[in-house]
Image (cartoon, rainbow, N blue to C red; front, side, top):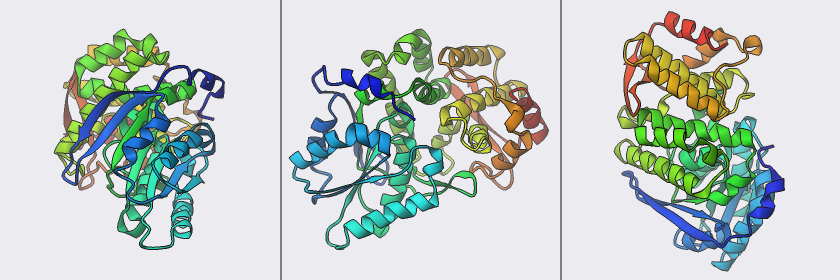
Length: 383
């Protein structure tokens, strides 16, 4: 379960308001990230220009949907949407599969059969919902509008922005997918109050990623305001979410399709992190696996004389404060399984691995063709 429903009672006590607006401008077309609080129903008015007809499919999961779908649907009806279908997928990473993709496509085909009635897909949930919804929208009738409404920190700061969509296949994370940019991202920070602490901490791993390789000031802000962020202080959280979205918007503008340019920086910690996540059969949350992946990547940088040990110590200290793992239980997780999965990573080129490594806080470089014996040795220290 991703949600602590006991905390929802506090969400109606403040007035809705818009905090921030960030433009994303990839070559395929501009869109806005709107960040607000307690404004999920009111935010529907901002969607009016994106929903050209009144046909909407909301893809969510049962827990998130029961908390927030009614409010969103009420707002959509206020802007004239009359044909709104809610489609639930099961909770968890295991749901990001071909069967759930097919079910969602069937929901579109059965509920919106008229080719003239073009539906809009709204992804209401975390990264799993956002990834599968974007893939569904990107492939139904060769592409229809998708609007991302993230409800987890990880989705707010990372996966809802940038147009990478997909599902897991053959036990490889995100093996199938398309680039399909959303037409808008609507963030309601109040939804974070219903996250379980473990999910909140998992999302903070992506924030740390941005700080380590993209923005030293962001890293230092998280160091100084860890307690406030874990308490979901509205000012601290609004700054962190806004900063991360601005960084990602800048990266996506320069390298929308991850063709070897700047976007590779967002893979810091992910080459090994994705492999660890998959090898654990998703018992580890994404951010938990990425935390280990970042530490291991920093160890690689130190071994290659690209980075001082002090950087690793600061990253590890911050991850501990954020209640993220700095080692993993190796009893059910074999190094060879991680190494095998890593070889399928999209960052391999001509059979060679490719890593994003920190050089100092806020700076990075890539390293390619690192000896597998070194990777194996470093991974061993975390099991």
